[in-house]
Amino acid sequence: MKEDLRLSGAEHMSVEDDCLYLPFEYLAVCQKYNIVSARSLVSFLYAFPTAMINTLNISKEELEQFTHTVVETLRGHIPDAALERREPIVRTYGAANPTPRYDDVFVEGVAWLDNLAKD
Image (tube, rainbow, N blue to C red):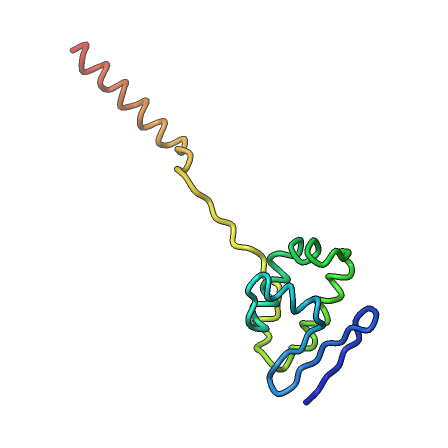
C-alpha cells in the first residue's frame, strides 16, 4: 500500500510495507531527537512543536500542515488513540493549603489550653 501526500515544494511522504517514508529534512530532525517510530514522531510533534519549528526554520502553519499530513498518513496504520492530541496532565506539588476548619480546630485548641492554664 502506498499513499503519497504532497507537502510544500517537492517534498513527499509515504507509507509502504508498514514503514513511514519522510522527506530528508524531516528524517534528519527525527535522527537528531532520536525519534525511531511513527508513534514517537506524532507524540513529538504534539509535545515539542517549537523544537521542530526552530530546527527546520519553518512557520507554525507549515508545522500544523505537516502534523496534519503525518496523522492522516498514519491513520489506519497505528491506533487512532496514538494519533489524537491529548491535553497534558496537570500535576500539583507541595503541601495543600490548610482548610478553614483546620484553623478553627487549632484556635479552639489554643483557647482550651489557655482555659486549662487559668484553672
